[in-house]
Length: 118
Image (cartoon, rainbow, N blue to C red):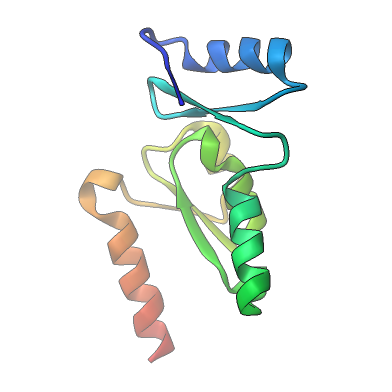
């Protein structure tokens, strides 16, 4: 991860991707960090490997995210949930928007999912 000491995380990630995109993929993570990954490696590729290993269809997977490093996984899974405090671009591709991180929205949403299975 790369720490950015200013509010230009998106701009910095764009410049890094443009200059070093043949070597790494850069994804903003929060307000001050940028994740640097090998091309083709993301949260989505990790979930894809786990799902294949355990025989789980991606439509059976739910994921939560709030930053652009979550973009691919939100698009990949069957149900992508963006947090209320997520970046607008992430909310735009999510299946639904849930509450804020600070309000324990992930736990609440998982409780609803598990209760609906009972």
